[in-house]
Length: 425
Ligand SMILES: Nc1ncnc2c1ncn2[C@@H]1O[C@H](COP(=O)(O)OP(=O)(O)OP(=O)(O)O)[C@@H](O)[C@H]1O
Ligand SMILES: [Mg+2]
Figure 1 (tube, rainbow, N blue to C red):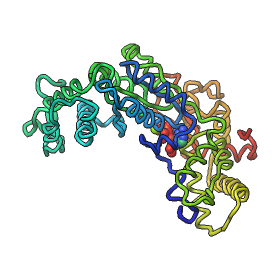
Figure 2: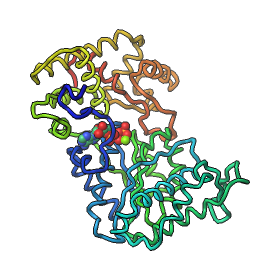
Figure 3: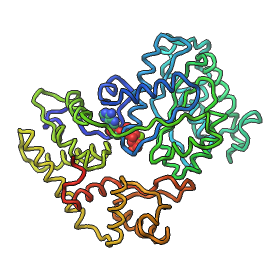
Figure 4: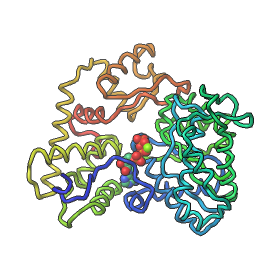
């Protein structure tokens, strides 16, 4: 399909931009954020944090920032900064020990896979064979490992009799990091999507547990990213203050950057000079504003439109004709959604109020929205959730957190309900 449009691949891929030279070309409008990120990682030994709405471009910034630091410190020997390209996630299911094990395994694999290149910039001092032996050991692979008395207490697996001591592996990796890096150097490790832990209380507990362990390791440089206020909430914890930096606040791309995003992708992926993108810069900007400046949602809708266009068999050679068609298609999408919904008037009123507040609210503000109890408001929020217009997280002990948020379908219907006028400056 993309070949027929004149492109090598999906122009509207929703994955984060990668930490490589192409990712660096694809990332637009983030010079200030990149500078801020790199300054924090290279100049401080505290945890760098990033906060911003869903789909705004946080992961992409971190990927490209890590890649740039890697290149900028190529000749810095022990002050080198390396970058683990796969971010980690903290989940409620995984134990602290399993998380630590996956971090150490990822670092060991990274060194093994890149041994030859790394030897040119770092003094590795010892061979990586023993690490490889650990990674290939079936007991290690299937998780039947234990922690000896010197390790982290309480982390024993049920399978103890068959297990062996994981502590040996941890100290091997620690020795490697000590040999490789000075106090300034290290490998950037990212914890992404902190908000999947749902409540700031859980996130705080998990990060506090890392404070004196992984966050304090020689040679590891941590970055924590999250959405919907969770990082900011956690960073204010008494135990984490001073160890976690104030979050870098990532705002939606502004000005011409949005149009540039499409132009850069077109340039990168076109097969011929007359390739015409199904959604060009103008329509992309239009959708971006309707969808409350969420890049991921905008890209998703553009992909859907491209599919529709291809399957409808229409032959269009002109950008403005495409722009018109896109506008009509979006309007038809929202009309079809609207017809399929059964939302009571009180819930619609709440929905409009949430949109007026910028798209997210805190459940503790029920009075402001005309409800005399949080429970009554909760019922209306549930109606909106069932209609896929908002998402809502568990009640959070941090009442300031805005945990009810309008999602893409909601913004599309908001546009529909306001007569296709609002938000389009
Ligand atoms: N500055 C940018 N230039 C070009 N493309 C971008 C930029 N920022 C983000 N994108 C694209 O937008 C989409 C969303 O970006 P990304 O995944 O980095 O956002 P996020 O904030 O991490 O989202 P989430 O909260 O869902 O994790 C991706 O497809 C990414 O390639
Ligand atoms: Mg992300």
